[in-house]
Image (cartoon, rainbow, N blue to C red; front, side, top):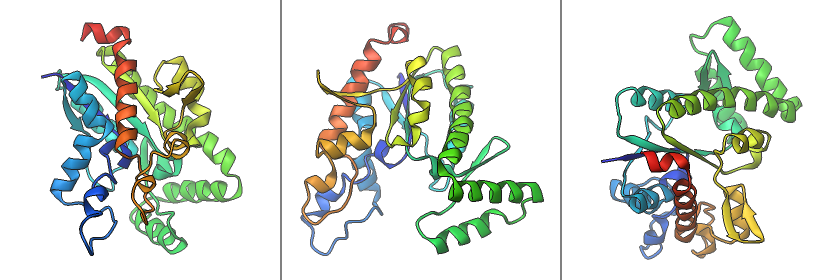
Length: 262
């Protein structure tokens, strides 16, 4: 059976959709710690799951652990492509740039920016057993981020696009359809690259309204979980948003010349 591979953060897995079922269960928290049943409920109702059903493909999500980095996921997919000939479509969902903050020797590393204490702790864990040059470059990146975030973003985009280009070239060689969804405006500087290579999937609402960013789409169209469930603050896409995204991807893929050859 032909296979669709989905790579991305929580939105690609439908996180938040399980909260609709919890709404009717007393004393159940609105959190993101899911049971196996909830995990697969989310995945099946995500744009990834809906799209695979529309295409008649099986779905596989590159998920190599909660703390895995963006580069780790790309490398895992590239390795899989060397042996799995059933992969025909790859969907990549991009989130924010500082999710994988530090890039060093073709590997990316995470830091916890949720709090100052979390940042210090995650940095301390990261530099254990690392050499002086690693620590020096990490400190330089942190300083640049704090003093001039715009310059840091430009530098980070360049590094991230090199990795995406590595994947794009591999997929092109194998005649695999490749599409990208962008969630936040962190990636604005990359849109010329995305458009030039016909990678980005935009969300068309009507002839006057098109969204390049999923964040703008769900916020302005009020298609977040929090827009449906009272007293919930979750900003993930709701069921309707996932259906619209899946349809846009489907229409985008169907007109791709590669699609007729796979």
